[in-house]
Each structure stands twice: as structure tokens, then as C-alpha cells.
Image (cartoon, rainbow, N blue to C red; front, side, top):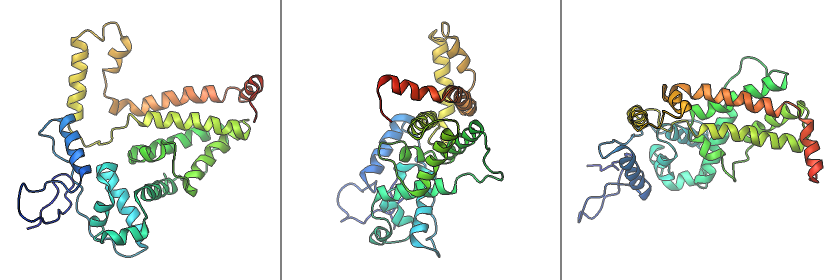
Amino acid sequence: MTVRCVECGADLPTGPGRGRPRRYCSRRCQARAYRRRREHGPSATPRRIPDRPAPAGGDPRDRLIDLAVELADSGGLDALSMRVLAQRAAMPAHAVYRHVRNRAELLGAMAERITATGAPRATPPPREPRQRLERLADDEWAMYRRHPWLLAVLATDRPPTGPAVLAMVDRVVAAFTSAGYDPADAFRAYLAFSGYIQGMALLIRRDPDDTTYPAWWSATRRRLERTGRTRTRPWLAAAGQTSPDTDLDTWFHFGLRGLLDGLLTDPARYGGERAHTGEDH
């Protein structure tokens, strides 16, 4: 009889038959199960990744990357390991490493795949810089909405630098350049722009199917009201009327408008400020 990991469902190696039966395929799965029970209670069930048929046809590396994206979309990056990928692809582990050297390379290839495809647009980008930046922000925000795990790959001090990822930066820098920034300041503006989007993306729930979240939100709201913490905080009382799930897009666009108002008011003054402080281009 096949024994499977109680967390991810991967096949477990058969042991000598002595001692307590093995329950997890790796320390990663064991740690994930512990965090889930700690955060959601002992009765919380794992979010299983469904079995998928072995990929057939096409380039093996492309098929592995597509499968890895599916696995991350289903269970997050914690559910993705080279071992699980090999099993879901019905390939021996050594064969997977022939196409993807390690997990870091795999994550970079996954980010490249997502940023290369992006959201299809039926119309060309607007010529006006602000409208172009608004569209670019919406596109990046939509990527994090569809693939929440992508934030952890891109929002780091060592992000992937594939052609598609760099092209995404190029488009934003070009929009700020057309608004009057010099190249160095356009990149600084990009960092503020992307930093805002990625910061807001931290509020996106990593597991939208988690049924315990609405109950947590309702209980938290009632506790804040019961303890009087909303009485002297009108903003907290107002925020508690709706769920972040329903208002998150509204919050995102509200902040984006303010950010662009500031960045596009007078780009030339940033160069003046740098000159005043003695900073070189």
C-alpha cells in the first residue's frame, strides 16, 4: 500500500517497518503542518495539491516551469520543492535537475514566465505618462492577485533579472523618463512606485480558499469593539465595517493616486534637491 505525506500528499519512502510510521516527506512539510495548526487550530486541514498527470510533449523545462507555477498557485511556495515537482511531473529527481539546476533557478524561471505573459491588453499603452503608469501599476497588481507567491520572489534584495523582469522595469522607467525625470531619478521613482505596489501586495491573502479567515476577521472586529478600542479611533471603526478582501482594490487605487500625484507634480525639483545636497548623478 502506498503511504503518502499527510501534508502535501507526496509518496513516502518505505521504511524497515519498525517504530512509529513516518507522516511527513520532509521537514518543510512538518514545519508547514505545525504553522497551520498553530494559526488555524488543530482541526485545520492541509490544502492538498491535486495529483496531475505527467506532462507530455513540448520542451521538458517549459513543462516543469508550468507545473511549478500550478503547484505554487495551489499551495504557495511552501508547497513547492524539487522533490514534489519531480513527483508531480512523474520524473526521477535527477532528471528534474538536468533541466533546472536548483530551486532558486526554478523560482527565477517561474517569475520570468509570469512577467512575460502578463495580462493581455487589447489596446496599446497610453501616451500620457500618468495613464501609462496607472496601467502598469494595475498590471503588476493583477499579477500578485493571481499569483500571490510571486511577491516573495520579486520583492527581495536579489530579485531575478531575466529579460521579462527587466522589461517590466524598463516600461516603468520609460514612463517616468517621459514625464521629465532623468534616467537616475526615473529609477528612483520606479523604486518608490514598485515599493508601494509590493507593500500593498503584502495584504493579499496567500490562501484565498482559507475558510477560517472570515471568522477571524469577524471575531477580531467584535473584540476591538467590545474592548473600546474603536471609540476613540474613527478610522478603525470605519475600517471594521468591511472586510479587507472586499476593499483591498479600493485601498490600492486610493494610495496609487496619491503616490502619482506626488511623483508627477514637478519631476525637475528632484534633480534640484540632489544638486543642493551635493549628490552626483
